[in-house]
Image (cartoon, rainbow, N blue to C red; front, side):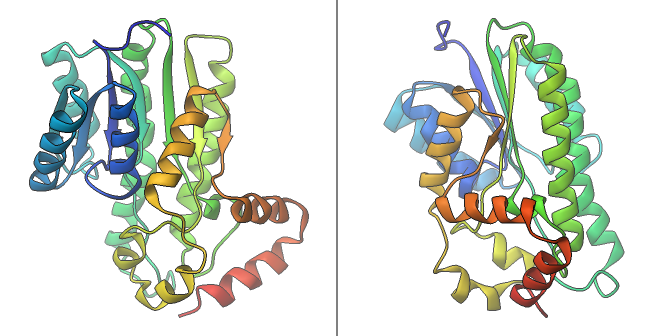
Length: 262
């Protein structure tokens, strides 16, 4: 790998959870960071902590990526500051739990905007920047929910299925070139995801299977640099994904519906 001390990795949804852990994992490898999230206060705290502890450059951009024009604003920020970008990690996203017909339509469409359209736009707008580098990486974050339909998480699982399919296709199109494309599909992780999704009742059961964000981040970063197509952290999650591929869809959906029932 070329000298990366002057290059940057951009991470969305970087203020907490897996995004924050991936920022730290890259900082440990002496990679400079561009961190994006909605919370400016949380980003500022993380910026100070990483700079003082790991001695890398960290710049932040507090922005709501669910705004349709946000990816263009990110590109303008990169161009204005002449950042040399060689890693793009599209981590920002969230889920809403409940029956499709009962959830607010506007809220579900906003989730679609962030989980799919923002990722698509970020890849399209920043790919020309990444292609300037000798080696570059895109890591899109999906979920094990991408591998099956999940009743009461219908739209969320569908958006993550899109990310998985899109990432695999983009990887094929760029095969043999300068940019390696990978998809991270974590299972339950000890983050604020369940709370925001309204799945507080699910938390107690999930605690038995939760992985820690730092553990997932380390697997993700290693897999990205190893140029893996799909990165599925945890043996249980690998088995569940394999089962989704060979068992009848109705059977899998029935199990999922029982786990996430309202």
